[in-house]
Length: 505
Image (cartoon, rainbow, N blue to C red; front, side, top):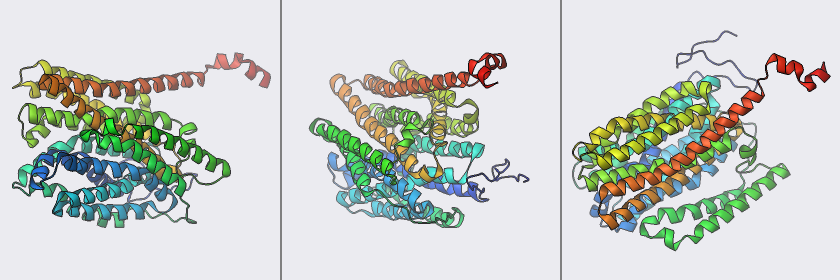
């Protein structure tokens, strides 16, 4: 068979033994899913800069307005694994399009909300729609791509994850600056509507249809156990601003117990030959999945909370506007975007070493930024820190995308949705922990010392602990792969002298 040229500029992969045939629209379809994914992930952080305005205009209490952010994150995380399994069992394309349509509708409802109660309800529904949409993104990539093309596609996906997380503050600040007036905050939600409608129309035309021989089953008991377990772990974190960690600490114990029962139930279903919600063999037999999920969770503990800390320091400590505060962290987003696209081409060659180098770059970049903001003269500190922050962004681009690729590349396509959902659930849990702990630590130090610089360094230092733990796990996995590779590369003399080889000959 003669290879043809793909939209990406490289040869199309040949048909595989698993029945894979490259879809000619796969690269265009990828951009549809990435735009939708960008919107859903951007909405995790974009609202943060508008919270003071929303609180003032809707006459909300601090606890109520906090639910505009944390409620979205909560329902987002609750839906991921179940949505991924439904996509595997039923139809990823249909679930993606329905979830995207719902996301657009609830975005409009958020923008039109007349009071804080309806805004929170609409945000909960919007987060649920985003949670149903997110695992279909990674599953569709696995479905549409193979080999080196999959690495490049995940490179774009990783860039989307990194940029959306870092670009939230600047995007929100820009929208507030352009949509001036008391009701300007509503455009943070309205902007999703035209983009989402266009993505739905293009998705209906470009996303591949998959014919399934039969209807899949869904483990209802597993859905309840996992949902309640994740809810118990997440709820104290989303209530952290109102003392939830102190009042609701016992829910962590309940959540851990429910997840233990969930794991036992999934193993029981596998033993019976039934279809579990999340196959435990993903963690025990699929190469790189368990380690990759751990690396992602630890990394997002530090990565997600950092941006709220920067926003607090720049806006409250230095008096920056939301737009200027967002511009101050733009170097990280630029570095992350450029490196993430490149890393998709390098991951097949360098593997876990790429993640190790990336994590080291993030630790050096954010650690150096913290020190410069602590000791450099305040008028020039953000500008002096920009190159080091750019270095941290480059490191981040070599973390998120390669880790997603290495975590999911050996997952069977039939389990791609559930695997992607579980991976993102870990990331959402890590993000919830980071966004609760780091700003809380910032306020704690600030309340005792009234030193914004000291509070910044302390909070960023705590975030770096999660990143260093992620680096240690990635280094362990890299060294393990190296040892395994050496054991399987005996030289010809060693093979000839091997007793087993001698007995066979």
